[in-house]
Length: 226
Image (cartoon, rainbow, N blue to C red):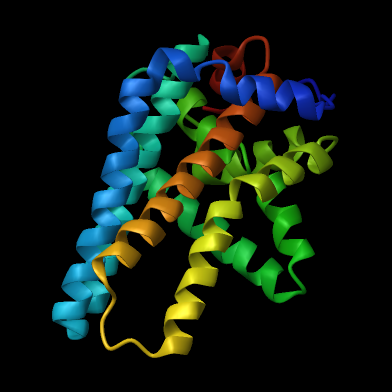
C-alpha cells in the first residue's frame, strides 16, 4: 500500500461536499425528514413515559445509523465513487460509530480540542467501511492514516457542521433555565430540526473528505486487506 497521504484544501473539501447535492436533493429530503421524525417521536415518548428512555434511545440510534448509511451510499453513488458490492454494513457502521463517539467524547472531556482532532482523523471511517468493505478496525486505522495531513480543513468544516447542534443545545439550556414542565411542540420541532441538519452535515463532511482522499483503486486496496 502507498503510504503517502494527500493534503486537502478547505475549498476542495467544501466543493466535494456540495457538488453531489443537486442530484440527490429528494433523497436527502427524505433522510432529513427521517432524522427529524425520529427525534420528535423520541421526545414525545420520553415526555409520556420517561422510564422507557433506554429502549427509546436504542431504537432511535439504530434508525439514525440506518439513515446515515443511506446518506453515505447515496452521496458516494452521486459522486461516482465505488461501493463494495452487497455491503449493507448497518451493524458494523453502528459499532464503528459507537467506538468513534466514545473516542471523540473522551477527547472532548480533555478540553474539547482533542475531541475535534479525533473527529477529524476518523471522519472518513464510515465512508471507508461502506465503500471499501473494510473491517471496523481497518476503517478507523485507514481513516487515521488518510487524514494525517488534512486535520485543519476537515476540523474547520466539521466545526461549521455542528453549529446547528450548538444552537440546539443552547435552546435546551434556555428551556431548562425557564423550568418548563413539558417541552412545547415548537421547541421539539426546532431542536430536532437543528440536530438533523447537524447529523447530515457532519456525515456529508466525512463523505467529502473520503472523496478527495479516495485512493485511485479502492477495490484493489480493499482486496489487499480482505
